[in-house]
Image (cartoon, rainbow, N blue to C red):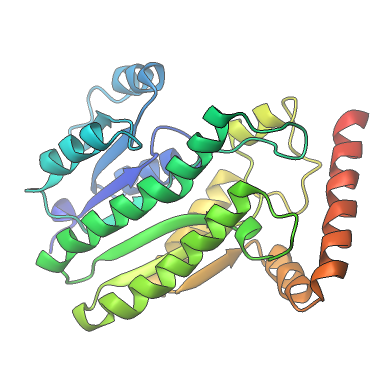
Length: 264
């Protein structure tokens, strides 16, 4: 398979980590298809990348069954090397009571559409299994199991478990399944959620570092890659604690973060 035949599809690729990964693959002369739902972002990207023949940008609300199936039909005859699910929906559940719409959005994007996309992509990759990877961008939020976990965190936890099932199921086909549990990445979205500055977040890393970590995990075919390393060690230590103590520690940690945010 030559470099020009390598093709990466990124769901949620119009911003954040997804877009950073897309740019990295384009720099390596891969074919890249990015999928997003925001028309303004897509128009901006189309203007910026108009001379890049290796990039295809598709608009699709992946939570809409009709649009999602149309996307699958359009991609069906294009072999993929990597399929990356990077879409995510987040609301600060500590500071607001989720509305019905917000609750549905979190569940639909972070879990339901993810399941549909992974099911479709796994079938596609089986047709050309050599050196192919199915990749999910999850979160360290899904690694700590305690009573006060948010809906977002519980969806990310299930995402990690689903990846573990796909790892077993696709191993006979030689398809790599990689789950990435990110810590805090200094994306525009994270800054917007934190009054324009996310530097109070523990172990904050850049988008460039996140891309390096994800590529390293794919290259090593890591089943679950947690980064940055200090966050990995903290999570491992906390995950061994009794649930009641973990709940108290997490409550104090969130209070400390909120205090730092208000002090900026």
